[in-house]
Amino acid sequence: MARSQITGKRRMLANNVSHSNIKTKRWQLVNVQRRRIWVPELNRFVRLDLTTRDLRTIDRIGLVAFAKKHGYKL
Image (cartoon, rainbow, N blue to C red):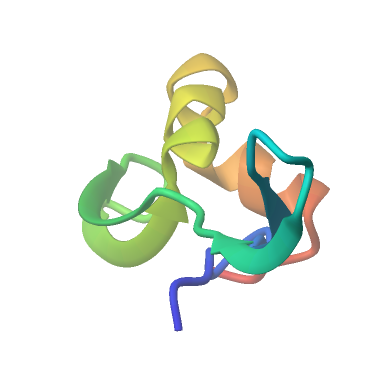
């Protein structure tokens, strides 16, 4: 299942709504990417499954700070 390793973000249940307002269930999937990220504090690469939102936040505050904020140990 597509799931972010750090935040735990995963698919959500939603509705398809037709023109006649008939609702049918469907899944909204998260955009999970497998990335190899360099961590200068550890002096090595780490391979993680992350959402694109997670990747944008990591670019801004760094992987170690992001992992610490979400209680994930690298």
